[in-house]
Amino acid sequence: MNTSATSISSPFSYQKHTTRDSDQHAESLAQWNQTYNQLSAGPFAGSLVDMWFDGMQVFRETTNRSVSQAGTSWENSYVIGIPLASSGSGLFSKQALPPDALFCFRSNEGFALRTPESFDIVGITLPEAALDDFLNLGSESEVQRILGGPPLVLVPPKEKLDELRTCLSAMFDPSHFEPALLGYPQIQRAMRSAIMGHLVEVLQSASRAPTPAPSFKGRCHVVEQAIDYAMAHLDQAVTVSDLCNRVNVSRRMLNYCFLDVFETNPIQYLRALRLNGVRRELRDESTPVQSIRDVACRWGFWHFSRFAEEYRTLFGELPSETVRLTQRRP
Image 1 (cartoon, helix red, strand yellow):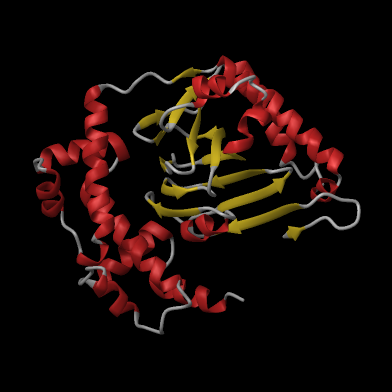
Image 2 (cartoon, helix red, strand yellow):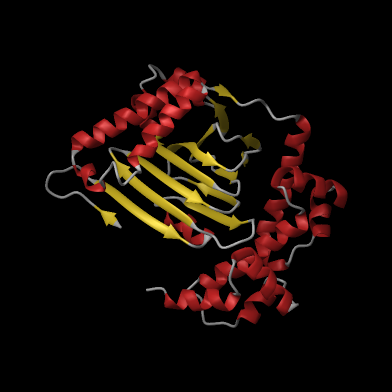
């Protein structure tokens, strides 16, 4: 649904999406450039509500599978992510993301996030130039003190975080909020004021998450290098030996690193990347008609019955079903 104000009114946008694919979910967030790869097995189900008003973007997304996310928000913006509910800890920019924490990053730095199996989060995206005015912290140095530096995880007092969560949840609850109300400039200002009032209290009272142990940071670095290489050579059926040679570690150490960071081994992670690549091609309506076998071969799958079973295990449907559902899309 896309609703815009007309006569009464200040410009706004309200969009709601229900998704059944991690790529579809990533594409649904307006003005972001991001890639999602599904990591845990089972049919994907997601929802996204995306609101733009009064110079800010506020969105809520829910996912039911562990997903590796990477990308950037719109240019010259600052993003604050507030998990509402989570089945466990995630990983953000080489830092553990516990359920009662939030994270921040600038658009020019981008982000890397691994979500837990079930994840419900609200994101607030603001223009960098307007951040000081929005947060009303008094000075640019105060903004830098609280939010400056690389992407970070903040741990606020639980009661302050819960107040912010309650405020945000109400704005996405259809029993309490009608999207058409955004047409009133008074409603937009009231919503921004409510969000920023709670957000300032959370940010000013939050502490930075404990610095990860050097061993964990080192393992994150190894995994990051390995993934960067694998992502740059996805069409070459990268092997674990290739990754070991690239990052100069043993197979055992690479396995430890992936288990610690992604809770899976490098073989399973590479397979998930390749299966996501196959699915991406099968869902791409702009590419010429091609056989599933050809696509599978290009991604290094040669045992086709095993490939089909692995695909169904990860995504909850056979490759042929993906093609059929894609062809039915309006």
